[in-house]
Length: 445
Image: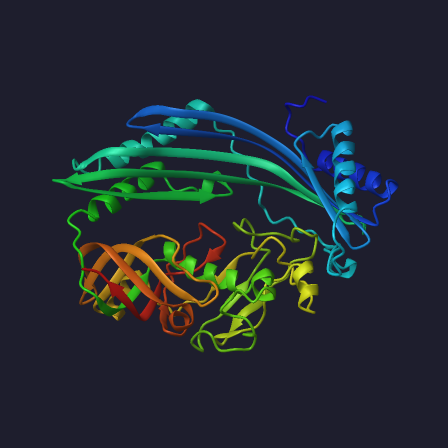
């Protein structure tokens, strides 16, 4: 078999089965392995010239073995039999030096997936290097031609990837699937006098047919950049704040981090002991829907082979569960929720308004278009981020603002959500519209 050819699901499953059988023969009480292989193409065009063109191919195998309650892991990018054997032996040698951990081990066999539906995640794109260059060039050209004040570019980039991912363990679970991911992005710089501003736009999809038109992406990148020229500072005040959909998903991301098993077990979260606690307004609901066809975070099973299921994470504003893999579930005396590796398509219900409707409801306040820094304290929930955006008056954008900070506490921010728009951003694993908050502290000049 040619090592340059991309391996498929059956071949990867064969490698995993080989590793698991060897681990058992060498004395492992339990074992698990994951393997992946894929190919991709990426191109960047900057100032109408090709800057980078890369073809990449990757493959890998990770093996974890257990000797009773001792655990050892090793990995390799070489999938030939000799390398697989060496990897298994290395994992076993590490396990012998490991500490006993009562929570260590595979996921409970009764929780493993038995039905593996096709979630339509695999849509390879046979775009040629010349075709990729042409698309990226059109995208950047559309941005540069938007306005004469756009005088520089960080480039337009197109990326495509397709591959296979498989997992198996000594409970008899062995499954895999193929997936793909394609994206196009553009970032440009505009100048007015001594002021320079930058902004970007992007599109991402599993199916290339779902990507936005290249010129549309470029024009939006140009429009967003030019709109920021003439920005001013604001004085410190407390104001309503509107997070557009592309940023609102971050608010849900902070929730996910706070209710993950590791954070809860280590008590390093502001949401410890918050199950069945009112966190949001009574009308707000968040569902986890792992089996959405073509979803950015869709999966029939998690990284341990545990079946994923639809569930209500937040109901009537009340937190209904944590996000747990097997290890921290055991530490907490709970059951895995099928979230080893993270969340799977979180869907936030909306209150019916479109984006313009949310602006009108806000009246006067701040529309945030960029957030900077990592000023979120996961233990206390304190939130403080550098920001830029637009001041809104009477429901209309008045002028751009920059060099400000918005601050609050996530508990207060969640309770003060006034509305969620129907302008859902589907470019990630959180499907959420724009979010209007009643009040945050804005610190400026």
